[in-house]
Every structure is written in structure tokens, then in C-alpha cells.
Amino acid sequence: MKMENAFDNILRKEMSLHASGVEHPDPLLVFEARQVVLSRTKRAKLGSFRDVVSGIIGMALRPAHVGLCGLLLAGGIISWNGLGSGNGESVSEPSAQSALTFSQATVCVISNTMLTSIPTLRN
Amino acid sequence: MNHAADMRSPEHYAILHDEDLMHCVCRGEAGAFDELYFRYGRSLLAYFTRMLNYNRASAEDALQDVFLKLAEEPERFDRSRSFKTWIFTVASNICKNYYRFRKVRSDASHVFPALFPSIEGDGFAALCSRMDACGFRRMLDEVLSALPPEKAEAFILKYQEDKSIAEIAAIQGCPEGSVKSRLHYTVKLLEERLRIYNPQLS
Picture (tube, rainbow over the protein chains, first blue to last red):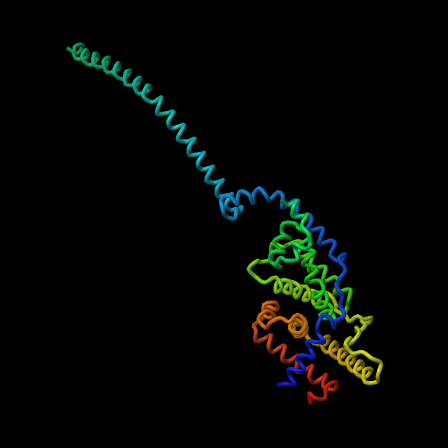
């Protein structure tokens, strides 16, 4: 067991970073990747408005949420417009009905006259 | 806010956890990226050097690939996970691609580094020790190069990076039992091959 531990220690020593002889790599190796990170700053600025909004409402704002809100808004606007046009009809309805009633009454009177006159004529 | 982030000093990033640094990278803070490179660049380069048969050029290419992936898609890192495990998982996948699409060859110009720097003096005993150490390391590297990649990787992650069995299993995407058997196989093989340098093992 002791020998195994000793061997384990030797392996650890031999495999250590110090023994590998590898020095810290040149930062120029990742210059391209660094530029990619820097280019993210612009995108982060665009996203900051979204962060503020999501911060206020205390949740992670996702495209699905925005889409759902849009759908609800559109549905609300459509239904409101529908109700508005329905109300307009109900406002103009009484005058049309009254006119119809009036004309029907007139017809009725005439027809009554006619009906009363018909038997007279027959007679 | 972002301007202030750009002006942050390296000392500010030095005290942050890896996971928080990744959050800063998502916001485009190059200082956080530099700090991650400082923390992991060397150990990843050593890992790639050993995994890619001491081909320094391939190792540097692979290192570039890891950090490019980190810079392009930092959102892919799940902050609930350990960054160390994640970065070595990315490195492991890159190694697999190298083995799959490129012929991994040993670099003939690989020079074994100075051995056992603690041994000083020009005496005969010291010279013998140094030669033994040189032979030991050469044999160790030969055995590692000849091993199947998954066995070599498990060994490097345990003995170079000091990772636990669970971490290695997460990196390699296999059960812990497989990691244990890979390590057992490799250590036994090394014991046999390296016995000549340590007669006490026989």
C-alpha cells in the first residue's frame, strides 16, 4: 500500500504543470477570441433596455413572453373595435325601428281602410 | 454601465469566481476573458500537449479553439455547473475532433524539459538521478502516447489536473466505474513499464 502511494506521488509530481515544462501561453494566441468578446459589448448595449424592463417586472423576459403579450394586445384591440362598431349600430337602431314601425302603422291604417273598403265594394 | 465595466481593473476580476467571470464575458468584458485565460491557459495547453502527442502547434491550435468557443458562445455555459468541468469538457470534445479528423502525430522536436530541478550538483549520483529521471519521464510520455485517448485523458485529468473521479466522469461523459477501470489499467501499465526506475516496486 505504501509503495502504491509512493508511486502515486511520483506520478503526480511527474505530471504536474511544473514538470510539464509548459509555460504560460502567449496572449496573442487568443487575440481573435478576445476581439469576439469585445464585439459583444455592442450587443450588450442593445440588450440593456430589455434587461431594464425585465428587471422592473422581476422576470427573465423571453421572446415567447413578448410574443404572447403581442397576441393578447392584438386580440384586445380587435375585440374593442368590434364592440365599438356594435355600439354604433345599437345607437342608430331605434330611429330605424321607429321609422319602420311608423311606416308599418301607416300601411296598416291604409290596409285597414282598404280592408274595410273591400267588403263595402263587394257589398 | 458598460463603459464602467470596460474600465474595471484586472484586480477586480482576479477576485471573481470563474462562473461570475463567464457572466462578465457574456456582457462583453474583455478583462474577464483575460482572467479566465490567465487561470486556465497554461493547464489547458499542458493538457493538449500531452493529449496531442506533444505536438506543440496542434496544442496551441486546440487552445485557440477552446477560447474561441468560449468567446463565441458563453451563454452555452450553465452557471449552475462547475466552470472547470465545463471547460475541460469542451477541451475533451476538441481533442476527440482532432483524433477524428486529423492525424495526431508526435512532434519529433519535443524536448524533454529540465528534470527534477531540485536536484543540484554535478556529482556522479546527481547525474545518475538526472538520467534516471529523464528516462522515467521519457517512458511515461511514451506510454501515454501509446494509450487509447480516453485512458490517457482520464490519467492526465487525475494526475495533472487533480480532478476527482466524478469530475472526470462528467468530462468524459461516462460512468464513474469506467473512469476507475481506465485509471487502474493505466497505472498498472505504468507500474510495469517504469519498474526499472524504481526497483522497490518489484
